Each structure stands twice: as C-alpha cells, then as structure tokens.
Image 1: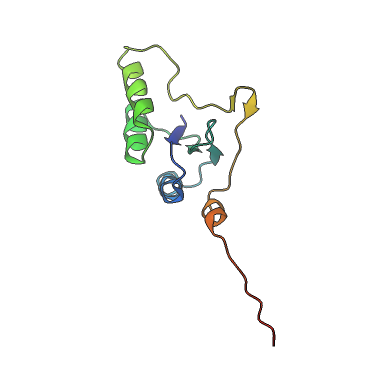
Image 2 (image 1 turned 120 degrees about the vertical axis):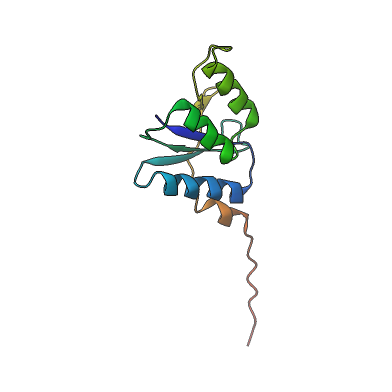
Length: 119
C-alpha cells in the first residue's frame, strides 16, 4: 500500500519534514513528490509499504496531512462513506500535476542579489 501525505501548504519546512520522515520510516522504498492539483500544496507519496489502513491514517495525521482528507478516509474505513481510500489527483481539470524535487523547493524562495564592485 502506498502512503500519500497531502500537505495543503507552501511551507517548505513541512514538505521536507514529511519527505525525510517517510524516507527514514521506509528506507529504499520509491518516493514521489508532486505539487497538489490546486497548486497550493504538495503530495509526498511512498510506494510499496506494508502498513495497514489504520497505520496509514495515523502516519499521515502525524506528518501533517490535510485533516479533511483524514476525516473522510477514517469515515471510509468505518463504512460511513463510500469512496476510494487515500485519493490523490494526478490530473485535475485536464491539467497534469507537476512532479517536484523536494530538496530544490526551498531554494526557489531564496533571492540572491549579487553586487559587483569596481576596482
């Protein structure tokens, strides 16, 4: 089962926290990071884990997953809602979701001004 953490924030520190924690918990497992379909956050996904759905929810909640998605998936487990578990979009409104390199993301915020001095 995959574990997909839906971060509804542009906070790069939260992105790196989720990425490195998942990498530590599931060493060697394939991972992918995508910008969310809305462009307002990120999806950090690790594939091939051997966790139960309950463990999946607990881990996602711990790593800052969207509380609304956690609630819906919990209701799905309890049989109150009928929808796919852990739904993450790869396309939305016909537009593909961008894959990102999480270690490069924080540097996109840094603006460096270089001052050239004449000698």
